[in-house]
Length: 333
Image (cartoon, rainbow, N blue to C red; front, side, top):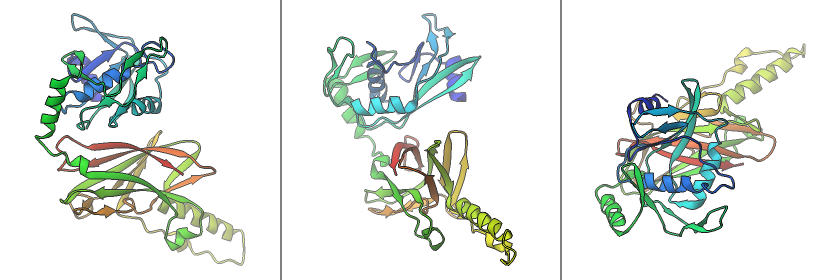
């Protein structure tokens, strides 16, 4: 949030910053496809800087800014679905909002998008006129504060820039995984765990840290295995207290913590990370190897019915020259 405030107060529109007075509209509106054009243009710029589209602010010709704010920000998932349906490869971004000078300001942060070019993967029509606005294979690029269509020269420049470095983020595949806990203590409970499989597709090992941000919902509960077992043991001891003939051993409440895992939560997310312990990084993926159950089957989901659970994975490594590898995933339980 502080970074966005600094941009609002000290920066102007450029190849990496744009201000919008109003939110992008996703309904049946003549400007519905504007977000696709802007996202393609920003991500195709050859700079690997983070790009920001800040909503609720208007930049005037004299470079001053007016603060309008927005009401009822659109859910990030709706934007994500629309963009993923129309642009390939997948664009990494997040959409957040905060209060600035009494107004709600939203912003898109586009980062780690270096798998250029980002092009439209189908014909896209205007929802009002039904005329074709973008054709399959079209793309745009940000030039200063303007946007132009990608041509042969721009494609050549993109291809040439990709030769300059090997982005090791492309060596890693992230695969969501759901299963039944295999430990003896958990085997008798009909619950699932959420976890990840990491695949190193390269001939070089890679050291990394990893964390996952799981979106909360009233439809399910996320907690660590150790917390689940402690609650179970408390309930069992409570039942014993009601039975005069059942001896109570409070040591039965003891559950060993998993030192490899740390968790915290806020109002909207349950966050789990792998600890580094004795090494500089939490995980070493050897060449052409697979790391199963990155979080040791420790993330338990309690639910009454099947759900689609959204999450964001962040991987950091010294081998990622363009910053953290951020990927949005879903678990279908």
